[in-house]
Image 1 (cartoon, helix red, strand yellow):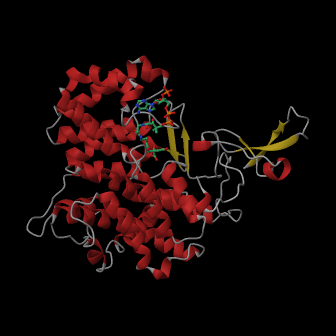
Image 2 (cartoon, rainbow, N blue to C red):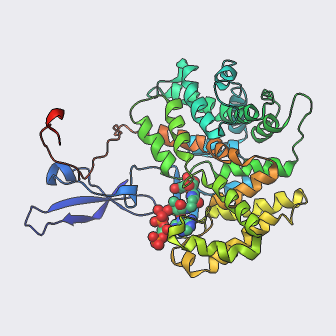
Image 3 (cartoon, helix red, strand yellow):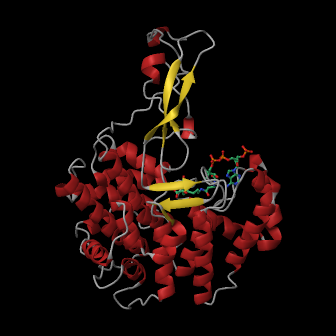
Amino acid sequence: MTPSDVKATLSFSDGSPEMQLPIYKGSVGPDVIDIRKLYAQTGKFTYDPGFLSTASCASSITYIDGDKGELLYRGYPIEQLAQNCDYMETCYLLLNGELPNVAERAAFTRLVTRHTMVNEQMQFFLRGFRRDAHPMAIMTGLVGALSAFYHDSTDINNPTHREISAIRLIAKMPTLVAMAYKYTTGQPYLYPQNNLSYASNFMRMMFATPCEEYEPNDVLVRAMDRIFILHADHEQNASTSTVRLCGSSGTNPFAAIAAGVACLWGPAHGGANEAALNMLEEVQKMGGVDKIGEFIKQVKDKNSGIKLMGFGHRVYKNYDPRAKLMRETCHEVLDSLGLHDDPLFKLAMTLEKIALEDEYFVSRKLYPNVDFYSGIVQRAIGIPVPLFTAIFALARTVGWIAQLNEMIGDPEYKIGRPRQLFTGATARTVVPIAKRG
Ligand code: SDX
């Protein structure tokens, strides 16, 4: 980061001494005011719940311009990556900073492919769950449990351990998600097949059975791979910040990624794709397109507690570029399956059109985000709704790892330890219980 010629001066109306605060510039995006010495020099904290104006770190991985609706992974626009690359290339890019050449891509893919199996003990771990457990409850457990199997790659400060655990996590997430799904259906697990691509392997483990093979068509495999690419990383979102904060204690990579899985589960974050599809199905039950007006009225009524799931974003105050690409994939998948008249997709497009013209949403800059269409694509592929967020976690694992490794690799990093504005009771004396009123 580059020091700016501009300085910030903090002055106080009570005559307390002024303070000069350095400003730093990144390669693109907002400058930052360096407040690291603020408390030492003024005895005051900054106050920013939800971190709306706070940069938690310097990062060179993913850049978002919310006003332009722009998303870059290591400088490459998401549109170009979605059109020209696959998820393995995207993983290599996020982890290493550059796109792989043919040989590098083949070597990376081979490495991932040869780590897709999980320890056989994992299936006994799964047996502890109820069959109707939510897949994200299972995934939070399974990912954390990986640290019980791979003692040779748990030292986050060892670069070799970081590299091995990164490959293991990327390789095993599809196997674990498919196992979590099969467990809830009572069907037997399928082992990964090394002759299949990353996305095909996942879809086969999901949908094949010992009695019947699964032959995914190329459009569906490409759609699954695109879903992985679009969800791979997204700057310092809630789950990534969770992974960074968790990893900053020096815990092992599996535990830090498990914390990210747990955070992603929330409906305001990765759980929104499941919530968005449930919302569309609810509106469909209410009467579909004819009842959209009534539903929008409920959303506008603050007391209803109803939000337009799949809309709005902390950073995007323009269209989420991933939503555009996901809508494109929707068309391709539904056409390929002969479902172009899918009522839910038509309902989604009508809802989107209305919301984009309605003053309530326009004034609040509420546009569709990646979750609005991803649920429809996954439903068309045959993925059960409760599994949507687990697939988001599968795809985001590489982003979490890249961000965690960037933090650990920064010689300046410290354990994250925010402070607070204390508003509770000041010191007081305990009254023995016999004398309490
Ligand atoms: C993801 O951070 C990331 O990068 C996340 C993510 C990633 O890739 O990691 O992009 C993935 O999590 C996408 C977001 C998925 N979440 C949803 O789709 C859930 C629905 N969206 C909302 O919960 C909300 O939009 C958030 C949480 C996404 C963002 O909330 P903010 O930025 O805190 O905005 P806000 O709550 O301050 O909203 C501003 C106004 C408020 O109204 P007023 O108080 O001004 O009257 O907009 C309203 C909100 O009530 N509002 C909505 C709304 N989102 C915000 N009203 C109706 N429907 C919505 N979806």
